[in-house]
Amino acid sequence: MPKFDYSLNYADLDLRAHPELYRVGVGEQGVLLVQPYKSELLPHWRFATPDAAQASSDTIHAMFLAYLKEGDFVGADMARKFLQMGFTRSRRYANHRGGKKYDGPVPDDKKGQSGAHGRAELPRQPEDPVKAESARIFKARWEEAEANADYARLKKEHKKTYG
Image (cartoon, rainbow, N blue to C red; front, side, top):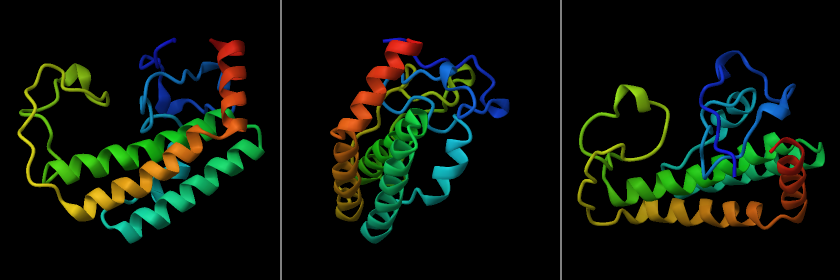
């Protein structure tokens, strides 16, 4: 699978107008870069409490379905990534109070990219049940999005057309 292209100038790039430049990548790659979707989705992304996670995941999933209805695969995939990120960030905070998973700062050349980048993982703390419930809520919506037949069809078409 082609990797997400971090070399593009996403701040000045409208991927709704240029879907041919979008690569799915792995997991959540590009979730906080790809415009205009980041600006559309990020204001709705919340996971601090189960109530916030439920409202957020419901809203983002509705946006996912709206993007699909419009035939906008990039938008749907970005919404799917926000649902996935709701799960992963909730789990991170459930396992690490304060959300800090790795020891030390992110290397300058890796900012904006996920991963340890050579840093040691900090020990897990006792699970926060509130954040764990937020994670469960987001995971259910993320799995629902991944299982959507229209999403799977558009994803396959996008990869066949653009790589």
